[in-house]
Image (cartoon, rainbow, N blue to C red):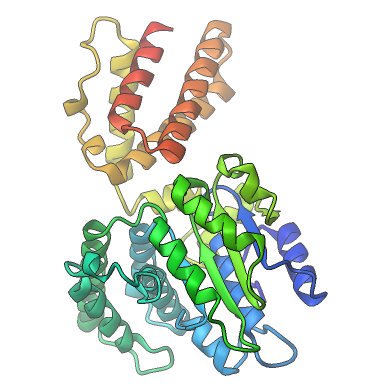
Length: 393
């Protein structure tokens, strides 16, 4: 169990120990920065908790529950909240494009189902009208997945390419057609009702990503069920920023922290999971961001931004000059690229004045990231503010 969670030995040992000793509480928080493995750990935790055989939780277990969990079709598990859906689907599709193997089929199926399971009828009860414009795309994506059953005959290159194209197009229509950037209060209420109707002896698991970005109404509704969850119902909350979760929620969950993965661990993930040469990307973030934007174009845009900001003779901030920033998907790669650039400059610069400036720019960049991630502020205005902090320092 948990074999594919690379570089998180300490926290995984703790989770496994709590499962084996029966001391895992019904409400837990997995927190850590994006791409740290906490979502995969949550799904594996759900599979192990639902396993029907002994010894519990072996990855190849053939119990009905584990079979359903491996393709994310377990009806007793619900998935809610925002995620980097399209990045993950595109990455999995690229692996499947290069090699039609059992592992690559599982990877693509799971990446798409992480999105599709956000639209389970239980989660949208009473709000079904909001799904009308994407219902066709949801059904199309589900039908396409049925052609990828692991263990079936290999698919021709031409057909494989068509499946990938149709899948990614359908998933893109879904994410653009319905707001999946946070967990609305109606979903928390629907899940609460579902949790209280659990069958005798059956474990139900609710995985909620983006717990640190929930709005007040959703947080308050969640608090009520976290105070006293029904028997055999488990809540696994996922968050990038533990500090953004209100204390009343924190007091009701047991936290499990996922560390920043080392460069070596990230290289292992790229090689073992995505079959990419480790030296091809500097980090997992860079790898996933490459599915949103061209890294060459990103590097040029960052160069232009810094050049204009540091040259007092250039015009002020001109939003239309930065093509990538017109695409909201490119904003996170842009900020990550700036972060890496500042980090490299801090390590290499010997100029005291330059170091002081870089520290000031980095502080502003960190404030910018918090403002976007926690408060969903306008990214154009925040980048403009950073531009003038650089210019005036």
